Length: 62
Image 1 (cartoon, one colour):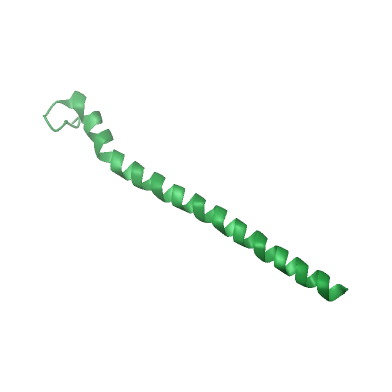
Image 2 (cartoon, one colour; image 1 turned 135 degrees about the vertical axis):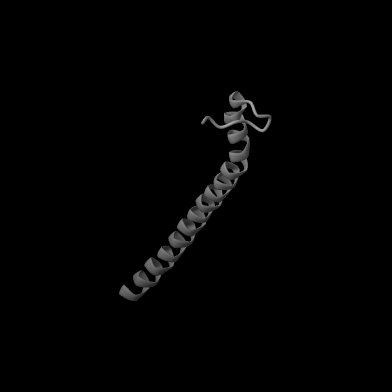
C-alpha cells in the first residue's frame, strides 16, 4: 500500500517525508560543521605543540 500524505493524498507523501527529514539533516550538518571546526582547532594546537617540541629539541642539541 502506498504511503499517504498528511491530507491522505499519496502524491504529498514524499513532500511530508522531506519536510519531516529537514530538521534531522540540519542537525547532522550542524554536527558536521562543529566537527570540522574542532579538527581545525586541534590541527592548530598540534602545530603549536610540534613547534615547541622542535624548539626544545633544537636548544638541547646545541
